[in-house]
Image 1 (cartoon, rainbow, N blue to C red):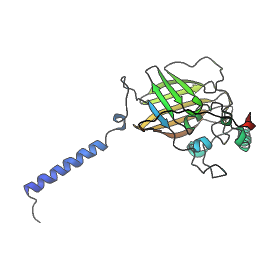
Image 2 (image 1 turned 90 degrees about the horizontal axis):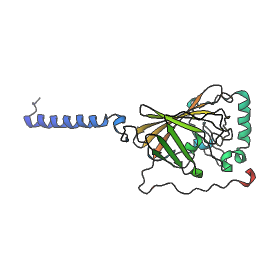
Image 3 (image 1 turned 60 degrees about the vertical axis):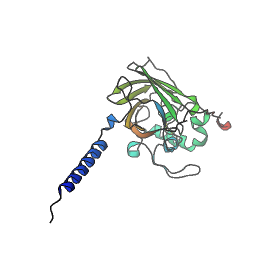
Image 4 (image 1 turned 180 degrees about the vertical axis):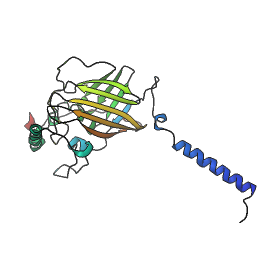
Length: 252
């Protein structure tokens, strides 16, 4: 066939250069895309929210029922390894969930449930501490970085949170809970020995992977995990608003 002219060869070369440049841009590592603080740590500051309600209603896969849509769960393997007595309590909780859920009494929902309630929250960050403000029941958490837990036992609704950086992942270790909170409306529960490890890591600048490891030797036969995605609110005027919880009269 006919040989390409010099002009055609130059045009092809320019096209290849443009394609190569585009591939380089798309291959930019995620670590270069995430926001960072002046000291180089990932900057988690901003407004975040889980954009589904299944983890609030039932953290496991579930079918639709009255007033509850079907949902895919967030538990790895969809199995919660209850000990036999704890499983019976879970069944009792489930049977009375429409009145017995502690969240219906306007109690603090505990960790990790506060993160996946269907309400936004705001993260503030300094080199010494990460603060989290939740729209739901005006809850507040302070995650102290590179410090030890207080001596216990202490029974708090939201536990005692201590954090550290593992590369670009914020790891938060939480202990010192009471046994009065549930993981969801379905009645999944724990004891005062609950130990939670949260891992916050960027997928890209507007999405965080939220991984939670749950351990409680009084209730579960082994540790188990949940995985969720947190979405950043980008609306220009977005802010946390007032939320007033009113307990059901039958739960008082």
